[in-house]
Length: 448
Image (cartoon, rainbow, N blue to C red):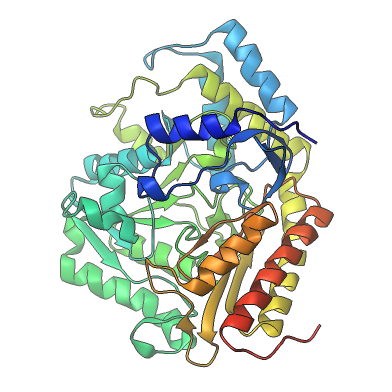
């Protein structure tokens, strides 16, 4: 057990007084004083151990303080802390080669995170095609820089609008809530014909790329039908439009493969990644492009650069992190445990009146909560909360399980190193919270 820190309240107070916390009204923030961690758990200044059921920001894939990644960071610091982006380094060559191998693409441009990766992917697509428009989806999040936020459909884009020009949005493969009141079966076909109609109305010659999350993450783990990506790939090829695959959250083992789109047998033109690339141990993102795009920039100016592009310590962390995935067979573990998790979530859906839908692939899962399974009325409004969601979150937190909940949804995205016993412990707390919600909405007590 970690020791309590006598200064923990002072640390929290000084964090609040001298720093700004993201995506929040500052006076409403109540940060946890985090002091360390190991594996699937982290510690706070009061001496509590928390089960990290959201891998921090769904990025800490190899868990807290993995010794092999720490060792690689320390070794690189001793050898060389920094090299400018115009220099060749051993780690740059090694990671670039590995990313080409695992993505099936050609060359990587390194950034410091997912937002910058998407920003640069948009820029490269426009430079390569000579076109200005980017198609994105409404229930999407691509980052917090001006370009990546403009490309997002997430309500977090609203404060920065109008944003950059040329963004055109389409509806998502959201099979639980098809738009315009259709059925899931109708929408499986309609979601692609809808995109084609938008392409035709916008003018194919004006559209550089379509930017999608491999599996939509912070807007609800929207898992498309098996036909979606093959049909989308064929549609974009028909109009000579690039496919940019944002794998920042869904990539690098979260679904049991290097890329979520690999489940569907397609190869994007550009892949963006971050989060699971280093498991958050160092800041790093990447834009990985196909051979045609790479060849284009052999004799055309690449108008982009970052002081910390190709930072050697970040690259060393990524190399070690990717080795951990392979050496410890974490993708296989994710698929095996993910199958079990999917079964548990389906059982919760049957048991609790408030669970309208569950969506799960690997260790990337969400429960969508409703007031009525027949009407599908959400338990909280879009971009809002409710007393039921507040009580659910408070109960989970009281049990020292760190969870991600948003809108009317509750995620299950633990580190890929989690054990079945740890997973069961977290799910037991979730079930207690769901029972409280059922009580609040007046549902019959669920049978064991």
